[in-house]
Image 1 (tube, helix red, strand yellow):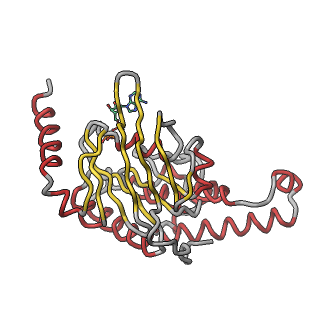
Image 2: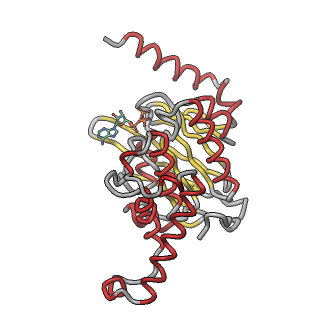
Length: 272
Ligand SMILES: Nc1ncnc2c1ncn2[C@@H]1O[C@H](COP(=O)(O)OP(=O)(O)OP(=O)(O)O)[C@@H](O)[C@H]1O
């Protein structure tokens, strides 16, 4: 298990995620138009843009939740087809959701155990017969899940029902569940949404510890301070198109980015 261990280093010259020409249309809306990006292994890459820019659609496409109309996808230099969520998870990408998606009536520990099952080896027949191999694996899964809860700071909440956790803790639990699949790329969709200032500091520290394990992180986040403080590089989308890519300092003073954000602010001001 990789809770305390480190993800094997990959060739720093090969992008962890490389996508090209990703397009997706929903009826009359071109949600993504020829979007491409490369994420360096071990980096934190931000994906930002005004409301409706296409950020969540991009996450949904790379994680197999929504099928792209076109696009080329590579993980660590190997082509993958994001056609189904479980296949993408097995390939090494895990994600969290903007609207938290936990098994609300299950315990905190069981939520993480479910994530861990992506990496289990014993077959269904061994589970049915409750073989020794099955029992050994179940016990290892419980131990790993507990270690992950400890890693995200939720070990003392392990036996509570997920729905009774605070909002911030539910977000941390989602991260623990995603980590349980041992992802090489962790995609976080607005992890700081609804968090107070103290929770955000803890979140930032947690993301830095995940990065220190050698994992690569793709982050959608509206909290500019968090994005600018955490990310090595940032990609900016607007109306489904990539309008800028660079270091946080570069994108912050990019004219197209400033106009996109000012434009959306003006629209919000004039909205009925
Ligand atoms: N399932 C869908 N059916 C129809 N239109 C959709 C669907 N999903 C997204 N869209 C549209 O695609 C566009 C991009 O939406 P998306 O949610 O990806 O943007 P976003 O950048 O994540 O926005 P936000 O910051 O508000 O979450 C929007 O115009 C949205 O209304």
